[in-house]
Length: 190
Image (cartoon, rainbow, N blue to C red; front, side):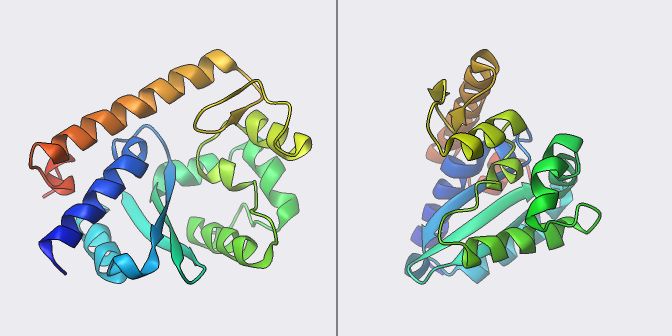
């Protein structure tokens, strides 16, 4: 792997997953061109180094030219997926709420592969408010109050604050990388 590829991957990771890397969001998703990166190498490096912070990264779907990658805090994601509001949405779709977090991610991956449309329950995994996930599903993506990182059907004020916090995380982490730090230095991971 070249230094250029390593830097490019880290910059994309910071841009798309900063709120998760900095601990204010349970999981983030990013889509990468499959041929551009040695993904297995990057995922192995991240999982080895970020484990001390409880962070994981894994491939959840590959459609040939693009690969979906999930970055998550296992502890925070587990808490999120097993909350009563989340369980209400996930259980009818075949998710075993009592199963492992890994198995629930496996089910999400299956749903992405078997569905002709994207499985909208992914919003639960990405820490969107359940009322917004439910609203999106019930309204087929229409009739939302505002749109930012997701379509908002519930509290606009809470969503606005969250969007601002996510943007602060992105700016902070991207600035660190632009100053010459790599992602692990910026996150203070040895």
